[in-house]
Length: 381
Image (cartoon, rainbow, N blue to C red):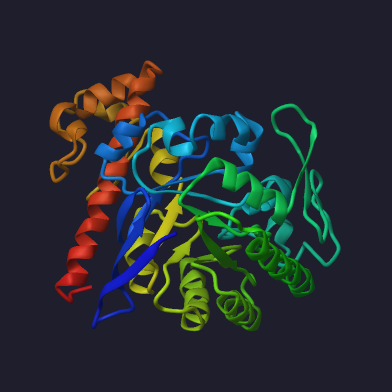
C-alpha cells in the first residue's frame, strides 16, 4: 500500500507539495513519472534514469503482457528486480491501448486533438467499433502488434497481470475515449468504465495501491459524474484519463470540473500529459503526478529541452557550435559534451546521441519540477 501526505498547499494556486510513500521508497510530489513502457526508459539503464533525478516510473501492462509475459517477470522476482529499478513504480491498466490501437490509430489522433480529421467534430458514434479492436462490456479483443494473435483484456485480466508484474501502484482498467467521440458514445463508454472500476476493486487481492480513472471526455456533467463515482468507490488515488479536449485551455477546464469532486487527501495523476510547457500549469491546477513520453520521444528524434525552449540537434548549424546544450543545466551531458558532438552523433546515426539527449531531457524536466516544488514551499507558485 501507499501513504500520501500533503505537506503544503500554495496560497497562490491549487498547487500542492506532497510526499508519497511506497514499499520501494518515497516520491516528492509534484513529480514527473517517466514512461518505461517495456520495463525500460528507452536508451537508458535503470541506474541512468535514477541519476537523471527520476523518482518513479510507469510501465505498460499491455506491452509487458505481450513480451516477455507477466509470468516471466513474476519468476524474476517482480518488475523491480527484473529491471533493477530500486524506486517506486506504477503500471497502467492497458486501457490507453484501447484508444491508441483503436480509434487513435484509425484516425491518427492523440489525446489532445489538434485538428479534426475530415473537418468533422463528431465522427465516432455510439456502438461504433475501431477497425482493429472489438470493445465489449466484458473487455476488449485486441490483435497483437507482435504476431497478430487475438488477445482479450478486461478488468479481471488486467488486475491479474498487474499483480504478477508487481508494481507498487496499479490502475483500474478503463477505456480511453477518442477526442472526437459523440456524447452517446462517451455515455456508453463511461458506463463500461465505471462497471470495470467496480470489478477491479473486487478483484484486487494484493498489497498494491489501486488508482481509479476518471473519464467523461470534454462533457462537464459526465466528467463530474465520473469523478464522484470513482471517488465514492474508495480507490487509493486517482487518474484523470481519456481525451483532454482540443487545447491546453480545455485540459485546464476539465481539471477544474474534476478535481473538486476527488478526495483531496489522495494523490492525483494526470495520464499522458507532460510537455515542458504543460508542467507548471497542471501543477498549479492541483495535479501531483503526471506521465508523458515527451522527454524520451523528443530526445530520440534529436530534440533537446533547454531553458530557452527546444534545440533540434539535427540542424547543421550546430556542426561548429562548441557550447553545451544548456549553460544553466547541471547534468553530466551539459557538463561534458558540446552541441557539435551531439549533432555529429545524430548525423552519423549513432545511438549514443539518443542516450545523451534522453538523459539530458529527463534531468532537465526533473530539475524544472524540483524548482516548482521549491516555489510552492516559498508560496510563489
